[in-house]
Structure formats: structure tokens, C-alpha cells
Length: 379
Image 1: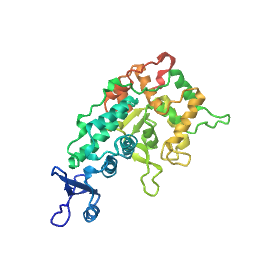
Image 2 (image 1 turned 30 degrees about the vertical axis):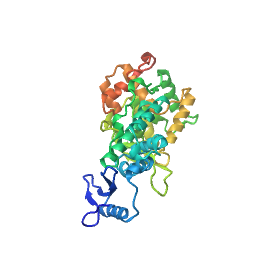
Image 3 (image 1 turned 135 degrees about the vertical axis):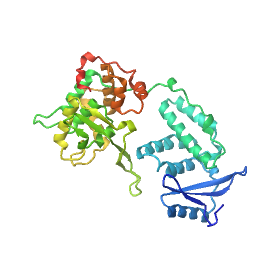
Image 4 (image 1 turned 90 degrees about the horizontal axis):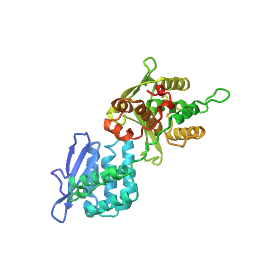
């Protein structure tokens, strides 16, 4: 192992503030050096890792590691500090559910473009969506690009892998409510018992989402200072994500984290129609004493399962096929299209980063009979 004059590898502080130690731990059969990078928040932390590596038992060449070991290390050491917690959760699921079961036993240096192409083709045959296939390819590619940069492999085999054409795969169906279902859903969400008490404590939360198109995470992050009742506007500036709790003392649980909106365009001001305004007024009667608009009865942030359970109950009582909360956002957008609203305005309301996303997602599902609904209740 190569060391500098102080007995250690090259230790430096990166532009992102982290400390990195690089050291040569051997050579490939072709004579190229095998290098190892270690990362830490402080210089002593990374120096300690380096000392342990240099003074410990000689490691096997990293190129001879199994892909499972290598990609797991890549996840934990490089991607975890780089990605948002929710994005990291999704990437970890992709790696553990798809890549490791298929290619995990192959040594890193032996992973070929044929191996990855067979995996992609098998997923295509098994009916996976383009989005899922692309996530798998992107995970392979990102990991192997890092391996190439660290001289752990001689080339990136993903460069010659071909993905299926997106337009040849069946798109995931966008589920929306019909005009009649919107009315039934709204009436059920507002329903009260004979004593005047609401059947669904936060039933108006779903009416708010239906009439603003906001994402569930954005709704959960709403605080009362985001609401301007006099100007009839709602400011979206944050989102809450329900992510895996990686605290070693309780690694199997999940927790909420405050996050930025999904895209930069997600920070936006939404005008409130009469239905949305009424929903917020009713929610204020229930939760006005708490910071969060959709707080639980104890003032805490509601877990997603509470909302999923509630909306399933509303769908059932309203005689509507269960469609999930996101169907309300899709319905909002579709009704705006049916009304003839400009796509750029719809894209802005939804917080999409590109108007093409709005086109590609919704332009083919405008099937509502607008005469069956008073569209004025939709912005």
C-alpha cells in the first residue's frame, strides 16, 4: 500500500466540505493501480478510517468484490450523504429488490454489458414499467461510473447497454375521478353525524387536495402561515417525507423529515377557489391551535397510513373504486384541461419543473363531461 511521507494516504478536504483519503492498496493484473477512497465529515474521522485500512489485514482487490458488496458500500458511503432521504430510500429499494438478486454474486470486474442487458430484457419480458427499468439501469450506471473513476474496473459496461424505447411500453394508467364521482366524494368527505360532528376529522384535507392539486407531502408540510385567507392564496414552500429511520437504535421504524419541494418550481403560490377556501376554514376550526394545517388531534404530523385509511373509507362509502390520494391531484389537473385552461398555467399550479411533464402526463386523459360538473369550483 502506498503512503505519503507522513505514513498516510493523500488526505484532503473536498469542495463539498467532506474529507477524503485516497490510498493505493494494490495493482490490477494489467499493472494499473487499485485505489481506495474513504470519506468522513472531519479530518480525524477519515484519518482514523485510513489508519485502520493501512494497519489492518490486506483487503482483496476491490475489483474482485462481489457486486452485492461493492454496490452496498457505494450506497452507504457515497449516495446516502448525497441524496435526500426519500430519494435514498427509493434507490436502496431498487438495488436490494432488483440488482442484488439478479447480479449480486458476480465479481465487480466480471460484470459485463451482456449481464446487464439480460437483466434489462428480463424486466421487459416480466412487464415492468419503463420507469422501473430506467431506475435499475441508472443505479447500475452510477455505481459502475464510480468504480471506473476509482480504477476498480477497466470500463463501464453500461455504455453499450440499450434500454427499450419508452413509447413501446404501456404507460401506467392515470386514475382520475369522473365529474359525478367528484361530487359523491366531496359530499362523503363533508358528511357529519346527527349530532353535527364530522365523520372524518380531516375530511376537508382531501377536498383541499382535490381543489389545489398539491402533493400529499406538500399538504402535510402546510403551516397556517402558508395560508392567506384575505388574498385567498396558499403558499407551497416545503414538503414532508416519510422515510426509513436509519438511527441504529431503531433501524426498522420510519419517521418524518422536513424537505424542500420536489422541484424548484414546487415553490409556488396557488389561488384558492371557493371549495379550497372553505376546506381551509373548516380545517382551521379543527386545527387552528396547532402549527400544522393537517395536524393530528394531538398536534403531531399525521402518518401517511392515517390518510390512506381515511380516504379508503371515503371511497368505499361514496361507492368509488379505491384510487389513492394521488388520484385527487390527477383529477384536479384533468378538470382544468377539460375547462380549457392553458397548460402552462396548469403546470405552474402543479409545480412541475417542465411543461412537457404536464403534457405527457395528462393530455391524453381529458374524457370528462364538463356539463356534468360546475367547474367553477375548480381553480
